[in-house]
Image 1 (cartoon, rainbow, N blue to C red):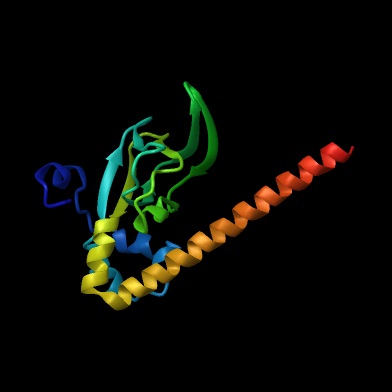
Image 2 (image 1 turned 135 degrees about the horizontal axis):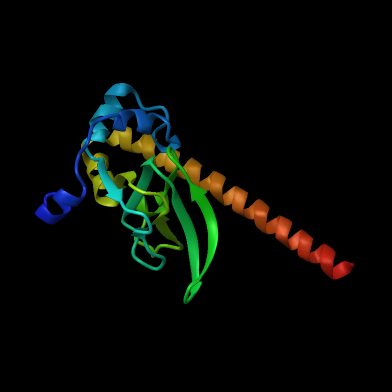
Length: 173
């Protein structure tokens, strides 16, 4: 994708501190400095302006993003001008990691809500290259993705259970 001149201009490589951000993201836990150096070549920095969409709900997912600077709103689009905020993410947070594993449609939208949001992008195609070129690194990344998704799924289940309990308590009152 990045070999294409259009994408190459949009997603510029900027090695300045990419490795430092990767160290803070659970998906890249337990990777040595040498391993991080190898995979940072697959990362790209993209800037977004205020209110610019990083991706939209129901679009095909292509990759994950790590916020290098700024804030991103994750929300559901429920209709015309009707949204439900799911999360407000800040510098150091990451999102979209499920798109590294499958080609499903995005379940929510992500939009820049501060000026000059910078994200580090890591795309599914790049993960596939890491799998081919550095299988031991890829194994660690995939294991960590599984752990992150599992943790987020557990939290979602707990939230659903609390809603069900709350709904049940209100019904019984």
